[in-house]
Length: 212
Image (cartoon, rainbow, N blue to C red; front, side, top):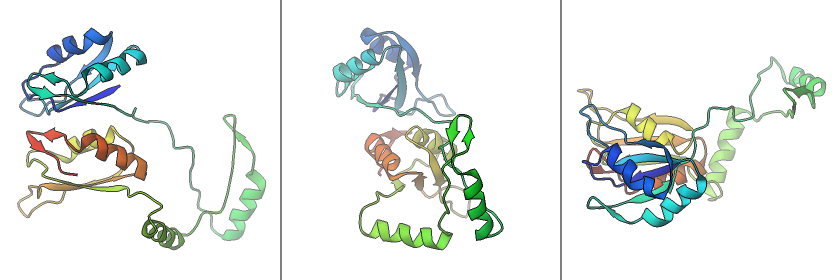
């Protein structure tokens, strides 16, 4: 799946599909639009073959299409499966140790359980701050400036959610209910945040250049 940005706002899905189909058979060509049916300046393209997708990237990235230089990136697939871990809170530390002793290595759906005592919230918070201070852990939060005033939180969720699992999206508002033109996006991991920043650093939304 490809993420194509910097489209002309007059570009239609039919025109884009015809252009990219020269590189192979498409299974998806989607250009998100606003409430007035105007495109948002980016699209998602999926090929039947990964080889064709790579060929399209090599041939069409940084190529002029309808007066705009296309920017093409691989779009991470959205994830609906579990992250492979969970938390269980018991009444006491002793009960937690007994549970680990009884259940360690037990099979559930073909997977062997691996249990350990989790750090307390205070311990995790202090460790997280220390790690960030030493520069070992990439930031998970992004501040997005120059957000169009007609853009909604739902639209930001869809746009940034393409690049990873979102933890929080905040769009500060004024007293009259309109937002202030900037947003805070928090991903589950720093790697996902970095991927989004690299992919969207030159993206236009409703004609405005998002500043990350």
